[in-house]
Image 1 (cartoon, rainbow, N blue to C red):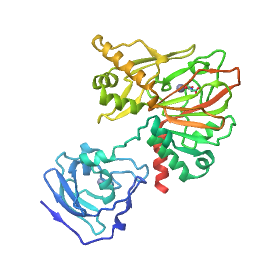
Image 2 (spheres, rainbow, N blue to C red):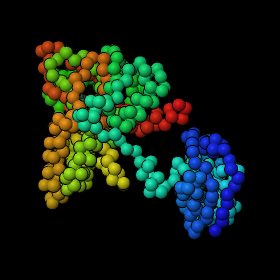
Image 3 (cartoon, protein in one colour):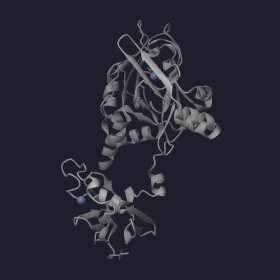
Image 4 (cartoon, rainbow, N blue to C red):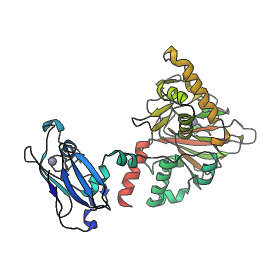
Length: 401
Ligand code: OGA
Ligand code: ZN
Ligand code: ZN
């Protein structure tokens, strides 16, 4: 066992950056390093402790032999050191960085306190770092719908960041005073990044068309759905810009699919199991295309957290699951639709010309009532931007603001 505790140092000195651009700030100062069998322990000045395996620390060495200064990508491969690698010494330097001299190839590594704190992988730290979406129903979204003025998010980086963080958290937002110039939706989406194209175009026009290749291009009611569930990766953000809405009907209804999924998990665990484990099939066939994909309606990650909803009744193909799963999945699927039809979960909004609604298509289901063109026209323009682009833009903006 080795112990080390250097003299006091100002907290400012340990707010720092490493190769990857991200500023790692910490309010905690490491005060003691203790080496155990296969991991070391850092004790912070508030008494908390963090443990790091030696092999993990060696894997994450940031020196210029291990991480390229040009690309910021890792050069080092972990199979090039023994699994049993250990420090021959480990201590805190006067800047309170963790310094390790390894017992293999005399390699030397240094770790910033803020970086270590940000990457602590204890159960509690991982839980704290897990993103928690703010779920909503009718009552809460009416009070909390994030609304932004288009000029603000187009001109100010601070407004842009606030808008994007709200979108990530709540999964929906309304832009106002957008104007009614065709093509504006693309300019707004490009404030984030690339547009995700599809066979419906880079920007699609939602209006009743004589030769419709989608229910969206008729005057019919669209039940609650996510767009393009027929694709391996459903588009992330969906933008719908209202240019004209003079028809009767056509109100938009949106539902937080994660809220419904959590409700089912809590109240109907057997239905949750079927919806998160047994795949539905989705088909979309047209003259020149034939898209198909099968996946559960509720997507979850390795921690059990809900990651996506995949749902469009009008695009479903026949179930192709084991016979003993069929009834369970129908029970779950019927329940999901019944819940989305309940008004307590629904946000209803009639889009006006000059409004643009943006939502996470992999979380929020959307629909519209049937409309009648006798009183006037209805024309929306839409496009998609993947969630990777949203998350990347937020991180880059956060570096500087
Ligand atoms: C769509 C859609 C909604 C609307 O185009 O996918 O859901 O309000 N449109 O027309
Ligand atoms: Zn190194
Ligand atoms: Zn749609």
